Image (tube, rainbow, N blue to C red; front, top):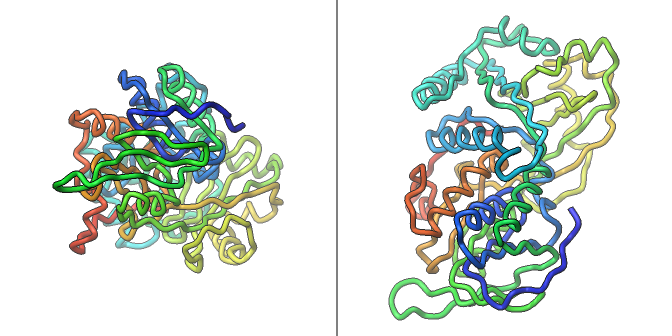
Length: 398
């Protein structure tokens, strides 16, 4: 998306840092609620960070009740996106299919399906034959069961960001790109946490009393500016898109095929027009801001493809890219308001499921900023949870 050059206002009621799905959703929901003076700042172009590098999956299949609730809320928002905020996002509600080959994973996903059903998400456990019928290209000889929810799917991350940014502007928010935040000024409140006074940027200084960090993999640096510890580290992930499928392979990958994930290996694939989008985690990857592609992961990926979907081995690779997961110690998000600086809020550390939770988190942060009660209680996702050694792990992380 092309950077937008505009005059930096001297004051804002709330400054949102980060122009990916999280930041634009927060800005949209705040402005839509009637909050005047909302300012979003992005140092690059909108969606240029992790959002534009995402695979685009949207789902409600999680093991943590908070993630189920936010995923389900996101699915509702994505289904209604053409009306609110008003943008075509190429949504394919073909479902998510998790292939399970280990008894302990079958047990864990069985518990998760029971939780999801109790929360109104009609997911189900399937046998290997039912899984093969949904995803004909995969081999299921060692599959013990599969978890499936037909309401899940995938859509275009760039279009979601564009829709939220356009909607935010329409409701009066200022959305500026090419502006980097270099500092956050605070002052002693006399008692308790310091008060935020201003945000300092490469384009000037903006007075504000409220900052929302939605900077993804770069959030730790933003938090440090306000004296807030946000334990987020970047981890590179790579995605490939094949050349167009010949007819015999395309027949095995119908347009209705779900986003399919071999859970034990994390190899995943979904149809991308006439081609296949595929990816996989790399256990040898180390934290860092590397964004270049390399071939170190390809032998492991090739082995996973040969085992699970060998028909793909004959396809050439058309292109690919690398992006960053924003990882926390327990692979669960950081959402809340800091106790270390007054009116410093954060939504970060989603560990691979941030895109799909963007709509719900936009609502939650809106309500926290405005002093309302969010639709879901998120205090358990406070960044402070790690201080006492507490964790809130999420099992369904890919």
